[in-house]
Amino acid sequence: MKIVHIITRLILGGAQQNTVISSAAQVKAGHQVWLVYGPIYGPEGSLLADAKKTGAELVQMRTLRRPILPLHDWLAFRAMRKLIQRVRPDVVHTHSSKAGILGRAAAWRERVPAVIHTIHGLPFHERQSRMVYQAYVRLERWAALRCHKLLGVTQAMCDAFLRLGIGRQEQFERVPSGVDCSLFEPLAGERAQVRSALNISPEAPVVGLLGRYDRLKGQDDLLDILPQLKARHPGVKLLLVGDGWHRPQLEERIQREGFGSQVILTGLIPPERVPAYLAAMDVNTLPSYQEGQPRTLVQALLCGCGIVGYHAGGIPEICIHEKTGLLVKTGDRAALFEAISDLLAHRDKRDRLVQQGQQHARENFDSRIMVRRLEEIYCQVLKSR
Image (tube, rainbow, N blue to C red; front, side):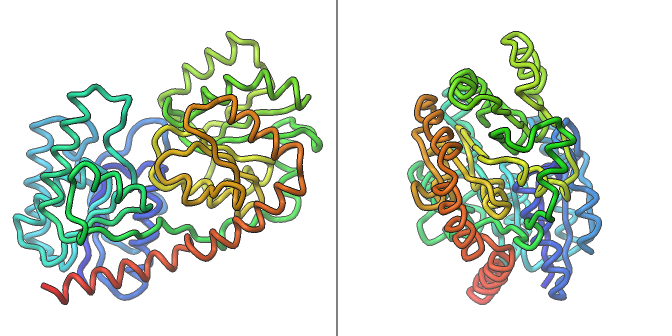
């Protein structure tokens, strides 16, 4: 097969990791793969080095930008059509909202046999203005008419689209975003090594969050409850791994409220060091207000962390309450504090949930399952056409 993947930016994120893993596996399986992406900018980091290792032909499309820019968007749409005309792919698979809308439109216009879109997260959310929210919904409805299959990384993504009249029931398939489970087995001694490097004592309770610094990811909610955590768990550290546009506001607040060395902002770390940093935590949290499928919770379980999350998006499909972790109502900071405190105080409960969570992760979120399912869906669509 000839397969073209189109994604807006190759930043360090879940959708991008999903796309790079898929591309590498499809090349290995003998397919011809093109990976189209827009300019990589900003503090979130880049996956370009990993993309180059996939064996796919990389195509940077300079006019493919994340903001709504009518002239750039029209030029990107034309460039996509020209690429499709040249390659004549069997499958065009789009990822992320901007690339998904333009890529589906271009592929449909060029009568590509299989046009697929993966919903990694919702482009619309309650904190947007009503006008912006409705614009995204209308665009997604329009784009859904121009593809054969809509793949939700969680059932929550599929359900959210269907509730808003985006797509038809028969278009949807649930295909969880895969993680290479073999990479998330920290080596002996790495927990102690990372703690030492960060000046964290071996016995200190550590609560972490792995993800970009963003107002919707929940770092501020953790800062809200930090005084309570300090009172109940002396010596607690808050470890925020990542980077993003929200960093200046976080740094200003940490200084203003006198948190000092109790909060550690690591900035970006090399992807291969992620397992070691997760192993340094006792509890990994995701108090996120908008989430597709949180790969970081899967990774945290595999590294032995207890997990706590808000009941938002696809989080409950990984953080199953009292089975793999503790789930609390979105925005309920009091419940967030109690859940984190519970896992810090009860090591036996934490270990039990982690063990069950690791089994759940390996059975449902291994990258090999994702790759196999994509191949099946591609073949089904092509056969039906």
